[in-house]
Image 1 (cartoon, helix red, strand yellow):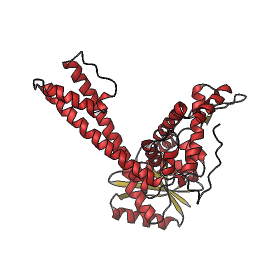
Image 2 (cartoon, rainbow, N blue to C red):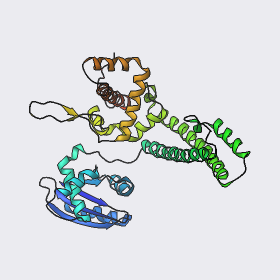
Image 3 (cartoon, rainbow, N blue to C red):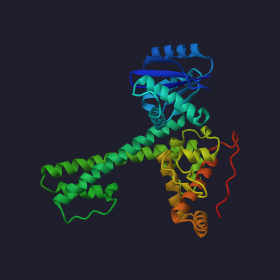
Image 4 (tube, rainbow, N blue to C red):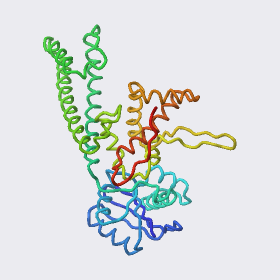
Length: 351
């Protein structure tokens, strides 16, 4: 069997084929990014070996077209995180950097990590639509925050005595109140800028609210049970769907916890047995689980009792919260897994 590593760019793809048993370089090839180059690439790989796995560096915006082409033709594709490739290249005995060297590093990193442990690429499904809409809403909210910060400073410069409550610029009633006050002022340059900023804030608020309603409908259609989970609203559920990108990719909750950076990392030596916090993984997915945990800790009785029991065992508040997050990953996995195709892993009840 061959492992074909790729180094993808906007206009070209470079590939290196290595033996799965030895990691020895068998051949390399560079093709142009358009579809004609894809066909040439596939013919090259099929001539080398009848069984192969494609290891693609996980750069979705650049490698997405290549992944879709290979998957549509029945090829097996796994995604290699860029940090694995970079670490493998630093440890290589071949100095320098080039596209063939990078492609070879991707293939050997996939072999070293284990083909079966890497995430498998698949054609985009409903989760991709959720991710696109959610990312667009996040961009709108970030733009709204930037405009609000600039507006606050301009308002402070004109009226130092004006005190704006926290979060008031998210509310249309406050935007209307400020618009009326600015309309009565002399229309100097700063006043005109602030009025334009207020109009833009209204537009962003309307667009973000419309996207939130659309996301709520998509979540209700795809994973309605997530909305029944205490502390999980429509936006958090949408984030889970988008970042998990298909729960069938994970064999068990432990795999999902590792992706989210919630599973602890062993850090033992000799007689010292301990674990340390995983600061890697998908931080967006980690943040979504964290929001659910914090909300449950505030208003969900079973979660509070779970944390109290952990603190009584000698854990700190932070350690107890991490235990709760790990328990929530198991619950999320069981909630998102179709019961007809994959029996869920039993989840101990929070008491």
